[in-house]
Amino acid sequence: DPAQTLRAAAAEVGREAGRIAAASPIYRSLPVGVTDQPPFLNAVAALDTELGPDALLDVLLAVEAAHGRVRDVRWGPRTLDLDLVWFEGVVRDDPRLTLPHPRAHEREFVLRPLCDLAPDLLLHGRTAREWLDSLEPQGVEPAGLSLM
Image (cartoon, helix red, strand yellow):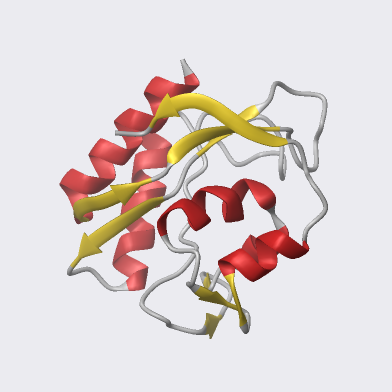
């Protein structure tokens, strides 16, 4: 059950890294990259944490692994994909972590739930709402489910 996996992962991240301060509704989206797979479920959560970006990334990767995530095909089927989209305005580009996420501003499945929480958040020089308003529709729709 993908929705239950998302909920469990959010709860685990909250326990391991801080506190989930807010969460968007869950959205259903068409897969990106490898398109011969079922629709994905997506949501955004805001986290209150004392961790730095690297430690938080470690938690996200550990939660993915605990849910059976295997990274063998880029954009292929997966049990769970947790991305660190933005971290306190940090701008960083290195092999381990790029902040803000390098493609978040191009993807409706990130921007739509992000705008539910933080439409004025700056990503790559524009607000999340400005980026979302500039995109052509990419097959994202409300799933009628909550993350929390």
